[in-house]
Length: 346
Ligand code: TXA
Ligand code: MG
Image 1 (cartoon, rainbow, N blue to C red):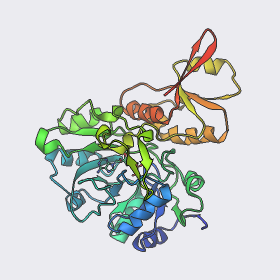
Image 2 (cartoon, helix red, strand yellow):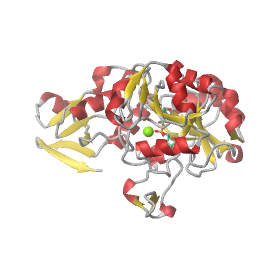
Image 3 (tube, helix red, strand yellow):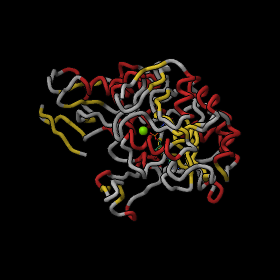
Image 4 (cartoon, rainbow, N blue to C red):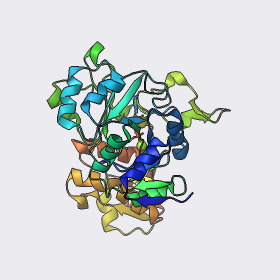
């Protein structure tokens, strides 16, 4: 199959209504999109990405009113947050309505809903009249693409079209917040930190967010195995917290091992040929680091260093999401002791 980068929205709409998958731009990262109400289209998304079937997809819609078309038991606070941040980089997990096929939600009784802010994606939803299921347009476990060319490198030959919407202006995936406990216990949980921060959500909703969940709870991919039917299943269901599989420990990873360090200055001042040293500070603001993070990780991955070294950023605001992605992308930690490099695996 030949993969083409296109600019024509109507071709994209036809792909969706025909039950095919296509890569569409969003303001966060590029998505791999299909009609959310068509189980065959959704199955193709899982197949193209090689995504394990236990990892549910986000359903993209065009208006706040549609939240109650596909979800139920929606608390007032959700609407307060949505009025402020949607369309935008935030995803709401609520109890799902029957109309959403089980394959979309990996059998969970909740659904993740997002109103994206990219005009081309909104057009596709509007003209097709469909809710659109879309995970990030990378192969499972790899770095999310933030421009059409990076999608091509990731999925070349696997899909027919990539709709080119330019460089994503957020650069990291949406914040995922869950309201499934809200009516019972009055708590909201952040399942994946993102561009919209915990502090902003607390301010608008007046609710204190459960600090324990976040991305600290981790599922190790090694805990899964292939079953006879080819589906990857947890070895020990009991041990694994499937609140949000985006919490997988190894995720967003480049092929070159990435090591976190507190000694970035050492690497910047001592030339080590094997090491690709990323100095995130050159991007200035946390916002600008987020915008460039995945692109720069891909760029260094292509340079074929033996390993990549990077430092975490300040852990507040968007920094929390940046550090979350860095931690998941990393193979471990490197520090300097007596002028020697000490590598510590994850
Ligand atoms: O910015 C984004 O969110 C991008 C763009 C394309 O919209 N999408 C994205 O999708 O990042 P994906 O599939 O790569 O990540 C979706 C995350 C996963 O961590 C998934 O486990 C979680 O959302 N998720 C989806 N449905 C869920 C549900 N019902 N309950 C809990 N977590 C859910
Ligand atoms: Mg993803």
